[in-house]
Image (cartoon, rainbow, N blue to C red; front, side, top):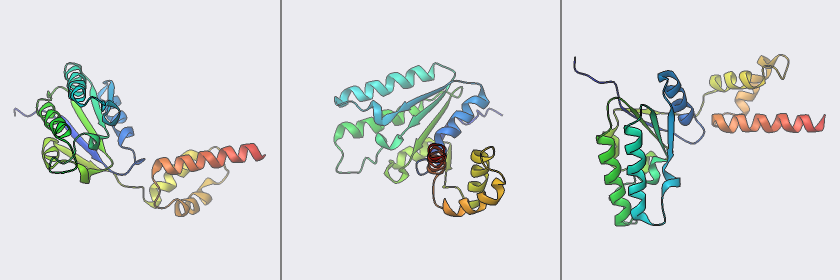
Length: 190
């Protein structure tokens, strides 16, 4: 029917809810390498170089059968109507938009942001699919706690309900970090 698979996805949500993990899973399912470009890290003190750096990486990824994750998209793709931003940063948004528009249908571009409210409105139109990640609900927390502690505690199902209440409102990574810390403390004090 002349249609191509989706070539661009935008993941939004707070830190620690699985955006990067989802990109890794998608790459594994597609049997393609995952290239990660942390846009906050690529910002050069010489702003003119930043646009060239981004264009170089994106050109490389376009010519490689891969999944490219643009992490921390909000570091560069900020609203162009923000009067506090300088002209060079606004030009970076334009460079990024052009590169997304030219993304080949043979690749997959995934971008992730913790701050969707900072993104330029034109960025939203460039992504064919937008997926919002939220913090886990109590049942999801129970499943995570069971998985993390299944071989550590007898009758974990009795504790997972209590811990899902205790960890309510936390991200997956916060919960995992806290459980790991508790396990380490327990191992030291035995």
